[in-house]
Length: 421
Image (cartoon, helix red, strand yellow):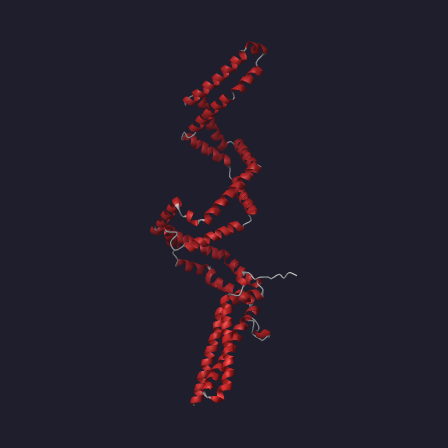
């Protein structure tokens, strides 16, 4: 028969320091009980044992009283349903509500947030960090790096990739592409940036013609009559056609004032105008855009973009020092120096951050308060008791130790006064 041992998660295990302090406090109580028994037995032999008996007796009373008080916070002492014990489990919901109210009244009221933010100069802090991002911030950088890696790895990649693709597609759908293309083409033509494109098209057409001469000859041969094929005139005609086209393309490449180049430029000007103003052309381009977006190959490409971006973000997150090097480091330095030097920019940035924080408190403060309250209410009594005891139990055991010692000293002082009188 296999025994399954359930281990508590690390944040719910009893801390070693709490166990040690419990052993010390309980050990002191047992030691005082043993000292009391010994002193009580030896007291007839010599009056000095009376001082030890008084100390031990009072120490036991103080230790037991503080043990009861500490235990009553978290559970019923000895399991007995004594009134006003197990205070935290019985008042769990009220503790959650009070914690939420404390958070709201001291941190999430817009006026409080504004006053606190008024005293903060985040722009100067950001400027100093940007100027020297590695100074005194290694732990912060590493911590943020680990957090970023864990978040990126924990997210559902298939769902997140679908969300990214959907957002990109939605943005592209909302953009009217045709006028943008028309304006870009018109700007390129006005600055003669289209000329290299035309040159490239002409050179490409020359290479295509050279590579496809057999196809041209075959086309002429098929369309020529039997007499021309019998006399070989079809070959001559094909050669003339190829030579004429080749000469025309060379002339267009060498002479930018060639009439056909002028016709091509006129066609580009007309296309730029139609892309911006012709409803039929705009609608045609929009249909082509939508068909392209619906194409599975395009969707796979968009997914690939997201995966590449995610992989790049993971590389940066795993090596934050690389992010703070090179040209980006220089840009950070310049921005940091500007923030430290430009007082007006500091005021503007601080005002923006302050307004953003106040707006967040105003918009989401009540939601955060409800979240805290409902989260605590959702915990079972054992969970909240265990977590609070693990958090503050070590300090509470010092109360037991101090109660034992203080009680013993008070008992010793009373016995001394009694003997003296």
